[in-house]
Image 1 (tube, one colour):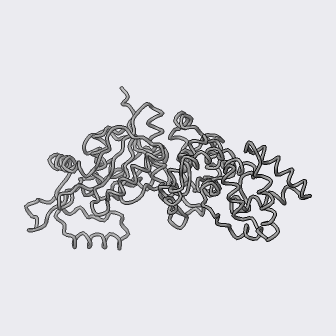
Image 2: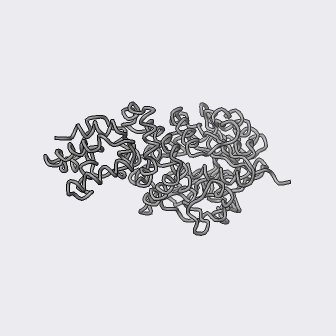
Image 3: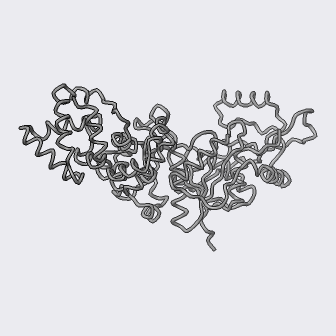
Length: 473
């Protein structure tokens, strides 16, 4: 009987949720959902110096924001240390592991000698078959795996294909340190086995770990999960994605105004292909995702492509959901609290009314917020440099006359305001543009904005007349 599919995402909580980690989690989640299985979350917090509670919260928050839901309770690796020790003791009792009493100085000398001789195997196995009775006093032993000395260790990887290592080049790895703490290698294998993980989908920087971990599986007589090691994400220049390329954490993309659905869609196409299709609904991703279509070479992060995709998602988003997401964004940007203080039922309604025009011109929520600045601005408006140049004594006088022409417009709508403006321009012998630009500057403080008639309608009569009075001669 085939076991139900169980995948897992197992980050180390030493910082933010890396964008590459977000993609790994997404691939695990999609594969599990496609096969009606589960995706589990395990926090690998065995490095007590570097693991922090804020980092754990950032990972959980980042996954939730991306829309990746895990099944069951979050597992914390450190809490399972007793179980990891138990397995090390089992291997010791079965003669498949041994106590190693080599001192730190001896190990350093072995490493130096091996490197000088060009050998990849750094530990010489000197305690492999020695009698523990020969142990020096005062040395707390490690427990090492008795790894096979000949033959090869093979992984049939779903992405990388058949990968083989010569056992003569692999060390007897440490399972339990001298202080009794389990190593990462042991903890991962025990946890994956106990959590009944069937598929390990992770970055190909873990490929060498797969050889070590398979040896532990073999020693315990446990079934090896299906392995799929996915290439890392590189920057646009082809080098490993780093800080100099820009944002690395999922939280940074959130603060830059990307929609979770757009980032999810972008990440799924980084290294995985499905014909020429670029835009996927969540269900389409689940239905189409497979391990065989993941490429072996590193994917390059293309910020322009992400921005373009995000613009598509913004344009096709429900107006109310965009207002809600704008509000959410305010928690993650420095100017957020000041803007949030100006949110009222009135300004929220104005944002919703203006959204059809605003979202056509924005590629990120930050741009959307910037374009909506005229709604949330306080009087008197801050006038930007370009707009200041428009406000000559002549245009200020024109604004005063225009205000008088708009004062009696009723009812106040985009259509009635437009009719009044056109009549004013005609009577003054001016082109509409010569009237619209000073009006735009007076109402928004800028030389660019959504359609001026929409601006008039959104701001309403009283606010428009007040702003025009502020700038009139």
